[in-house]
Image (tube, rainbow, N blue to C red; front, side, top):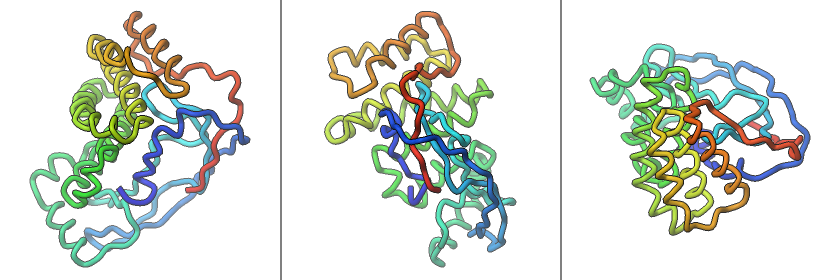
Amino acid sequence: MRRILMAAAAVGVLTAAGSPATAGTPGRAESVCPVDGKNFTWTTTASYSTWGMELDGKPIGSWHFPMTIPQCPDSKFPVYQEEWTDEEKTAIRALVATPEYAAVRDEASYYLLRFVAERLTPADAEDPVAVGWLLLQATWQVRDEPERYARYARELVAAVDAELPALKTGDMDNWWFFQLATANVQRQAGDFAGASARLDSLADEQPVEHVAERIALTRQLIAAQDRKPTAPPDPDRPGGDDHDH
């Protein structure tokens, strides 16, 4: 996707950083809904810091993750860019009027964004990182809803597995990121056999930096049938990455 929503530098949080942590400060932002042209406000932050990530890829930092997507108050359409052409607005209104959109409008915002992207920005949706990244962030949003989390996890597994061959030939950092994050989503959904099989399939691969210890911790959690979100201890990383939003 465009702008901040596809800041899919997913693997960037696999590496350590050393700058001082900065707290995210809430602020109000204004957007215009492309469906009805109405202005609305929503809460965001101008800057935040991250200092690592949980095993399923969710950043640890001074703000909540994933970042908020502004949504139209009435239709819940995810406003993923600032300006729209007349042709784009027409396509959006047509999509929002469909029964298919009505069926998913109350899903997590990143799940809905994935649905919209596949229909309105097919070039973005065909990116081997894009769909998996949106679905992964959607799983972070529904961690406290076991049934929906399990459904999102199944869809994530299917989407990631379909794109892994393309990633392996051209983007090994993201290949590792999605393998490990997906294994932990499977674990957190209670699919311990699937998570273990995914890690077993990586045995002959050479992991990128910081992955080996995460694999070992994931295996320990699988053996204990532990479903809780977990971050590896990082005692030597007191700093963080600063981000302007």
